[in-house]
Amino acid sequence: MLSRSQVSRVVDALQSRGLVTRTPSPRDARSVEVALTPEGRRLFEEADATRRACLAPVFTDLLDAEDLEALSTVWQKLKANKNA
Image 1 (spheres, rainbow, N blue to C red):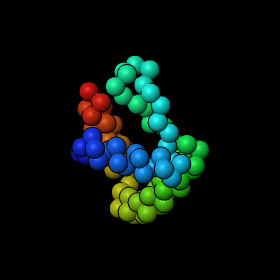
Image 2: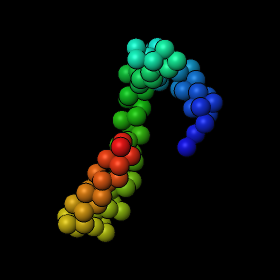
Image 3: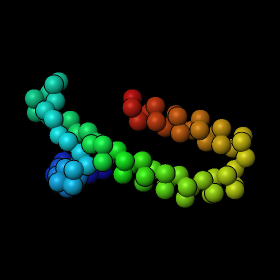
């Protein structure tokens, strides 16, 4: 939901902080590939752990195992449709 220029500015900021690298795409000369650096991966994992810790009580306090399985099925369908 971001424009190309917005994405470019975000990637520029992440690159300037040493969190991502850009390399020319081997498949498309007009594109670049962006990858997390080790520090970027570390910060992502830290943020993801925080997100999981914040969301876990909401899900585990309100949903039983059957609900969680149904939710997982829905997420898988949504994810598969996104990639279609």
